[in-house]
Amino acid sequence: MAAKQAAEAEPAVSRVNRFAQGLAALAAFVEQHGHPRVPRPHKQPLETVEVGPGGEDVASVSHFALGTWLNNQKSRRAKLTVGQLTQLAEHGVDWA
Image 1 (cartoon, rainbow, N blue to C red):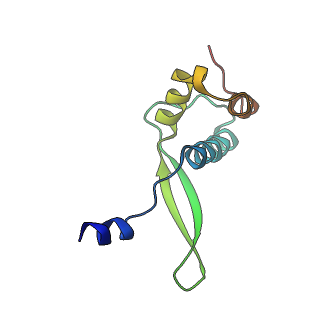
Image 2 (cartoon, rainbow, N blue to C red; image 1 turned 90 degrees about the vertical axis):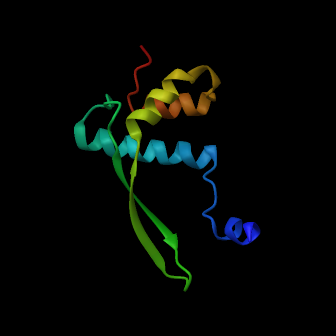
């Protein structure tokens, strides 16, 4: 029974995918507000498109915890890759 539940569970989001989601949410926030100063409790609507069981595209909107994500990136910046730091800087993230 546990194996069936595990098979039906949604796949875990990898750190690479999570970072990409965060960048997409940050880009949307910056476009909307004109700056990257995200309040910690802010959740950014993020549209995703997945392939449905019949092969059709299924769009859904989730609310990405952008403020928390960005705060966590700043807290662990020593562990981020140069590429990740560059991508965040391109969106105007200030490390002060």
